[in-house]
Image 1 (tube, rainbow, N blue to C red):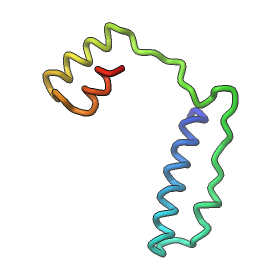
Image 2: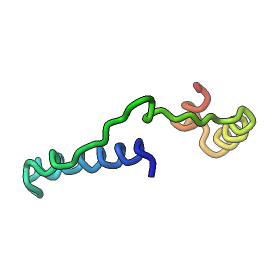
Image 3: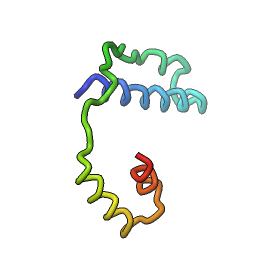
Image 4: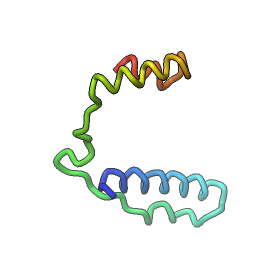
Length: 78
């Protein structure tokens, strides 16, 4: 698992534990016991790209199957 993925997953877990603490389901300080890894030198940035041909294929699909959906509009704006 990449470090950025681990950080994201642990962040989600911490958010849930904060929620659980608010409803008294877990000890109040439990979320603070989850330490997130530090990111350095662009570790949190993806260097992958989407080929223009693939974008056209995805847009064609979304236009037919999910016109106006959030995914369709987001990809159009990119």
